[in-house]
Image (tube, rainbow, N blue to C red):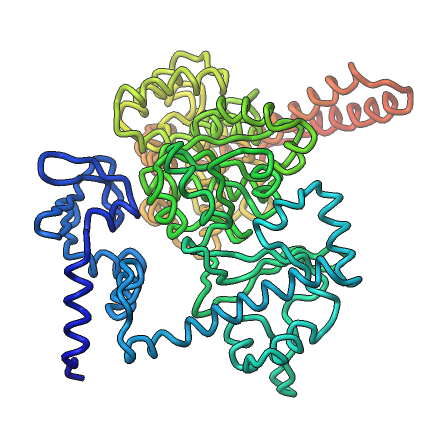
Length: 588
């Protein structure tokens, strides 16, 4: 379609009003360098700024990824909108009236925003003025939310009715199709009947950076699932691109140059009303790259304070990956006593929270201590496993000095005193490797001479060993050994017929395992025979039984009552019999 003269005049009027530096600075920090402004590129990951804005030419360009253009192009790329929408956004920003044709094109969005605002008023009225809202009022009181907090965030309540909101908004003249498009109603396909999405829930309006209500979150106050329910994806709302409360806290985040990232509405509100500044909350969906781009408009420093349960810890790790890839400086706050931020600040107070916040550990210290809790640091294999969980994050550090400083932290957390492993750790950190070549605290030669590695070598090289021992060998026979992961893959391949080092190596994804297999293949040794393979199996099983015997002995030393002692003694005698039987069994 050929643009009209009115459209061209409108475009040029908007273009003449633009200040690209001001627009870009609203999304990411810029620093003046000569006649230009420089910052970290939002369109690719980088640690050294290569993104430049030329205010004189009204253009931007990244020398790292080659992306460039004018203010319209920047907005299209950053906000993921087409040119007409970018034009409308900039016109509204600079107070330029939209031509009638353009205004009509944006009428659907405006209509949906009016529906959302009417829903906010309805939910708020139900909470404050009706008997149906009593459950919501009592819940808020129990959670210690102040009246001014409820008002500031327009918290409401959805009654336990199928058509409460529907009837109210239809009565105000809103078409049913708009209620559906806004995600406020559900439709039963079999009957075509529509009904309220939110029922018997406390309602939290979700606003974009402009303060417009684009969706809702609902928290159930009685029994039922799910506990939290968000609006679906709509023309207004994409939950992976919105952070709760950011419309009101963005200024404080920019001023403090730090954001505190929490999970969900109540954590945000409880902290906010005690005066903790710079908050933003995910909507229970996990942290996304779009969230990172959103925060990068205001700061590159984040403290992650998710819930301490297993789901919260998993979410913390996922958010770290995204934030680090996006060039953020990250700390992690885990509150003592297994408390979430809401419970902690209500019981311990804001001063205690702020003290812990100021001393929140770096993400590497958090990861090291969190990894240490999930492995057996008393065993060499456990220390190596813990180190390999953390090393990929150490390798991301650009500075060699920063990386070397982490060696002391890791050696302290994982209690590493062995000189060989400490030297290997230093070597891995200096080379920015993501794993240790050493797989035990013994030297490489000792590792490969053990019965587990020798049995694996015989299993690969000797068809008779695979045929005779394969059916009886279990994963527990090589569990905890340095070749456990390789063994599992080899055992799965055994049923396919042909076995070779090359085929096995191609199925290993861990570089440490690939390196170990290569050394195992090239290591000289006696001619493979079935008797040696059977002897390796006996030695492994005897070692496993001996470890269980030692565990029983330790339990015996701390047993408190006679019944427990008798049971442990019986188990100990049974184990001794098994060990004796293994040692006495004749060789095949």
